[in-house]
Length: 200
Ligand code: MD3
Ligand code: FE
Image 1 (spheres, protein in one colour):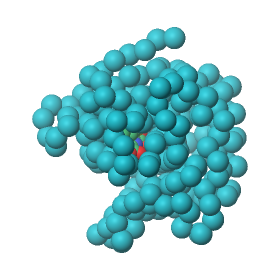
Image 2 (image 1 turned 120 degrees about the vertical axis):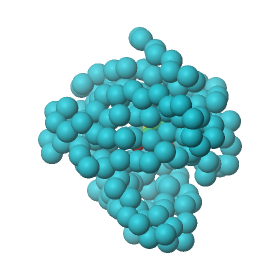
Image 3 (image 1 turned 180 degrees about the vertical axis):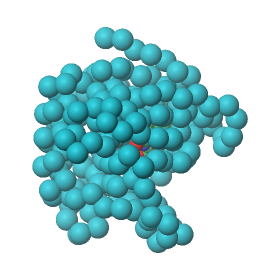
Image 4 (image 1 turned 90 degrees about the vertical axis):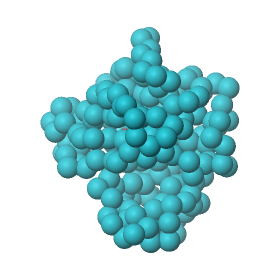
């Protein structure tokens, strides 16, 4: 299979076949019955445009009290287990890493975006993050270890997987926009991004 390297980001275009994507979406629908999508607010109280949920031992939460990982959904329920297909993908792509403890589920409608940020709420930043894109295409921007400087952008398509290890793990990154109606995977459109993380 093809692998593209952009800086230290490792991109696997079309890692999941369309059949595998359909199966994964069906499993995610089951996860979201137990742990429905919710709209996080920043600590300052601004609603984020992305809706979120999670699977695994921990989910990432943002609310007036701050950013953190929590063992339960805001409803008080435990998060559902991470789907097997994602655990298998992790072991295929990052066999030396610890097992993921969180699969963050981000849902984007056509207006959603995610500003440039670093992911550093995890205890061990030497562990990789692996992301899966499903549904409409999104413009992913990769920056540097510190805010500002030159950036590079790539369109992520349904079925693509990105591995963030090494210097990419600490790089600023974001989603500038979603291209509406660029995929037929999700009947109502939109984009799902899954990120698998080691939290503790
Ligand atoms: C680089 N998600 O959930 S995926 C996030 O498409 C997040 O929803 C975006 O940024 C999305 O935090 C981008 C690619 C990605 C995910 C996690 C990373 C890049 C990363 C963690 C560290 C460095
Ligand atoms: Fe991120």
